[in-house]
Image (tube, rainbow, N blue to C red):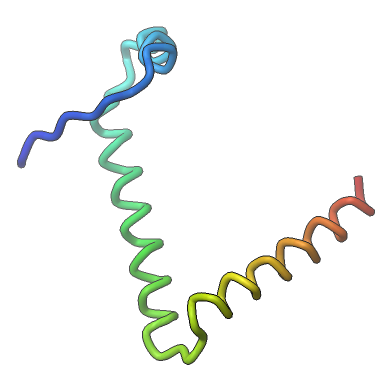
Amino acid sequence: MVNMTLAVPKELKHEMDDFPEINWSEVARIAFRRRIEALRIVKEFTSESELTEKDAIELGRKVNKALRKRYARTS
């Protein structure tokens, strides 16, 4: 295994210190693995897409707008 150094804000470090029983390195490894898995799914999904980046951003904005409307009504 290789070592990696991360920088976190002082406030976050103080909060982490409140839980000395937690293996923060393991938490980071799990987070890295989950993010990599999500990125692989996105990469696979988009590998044969004909959408441009601009099209994808516009589609994302439309989805976000629709979700905001939907959840604003249910609140």
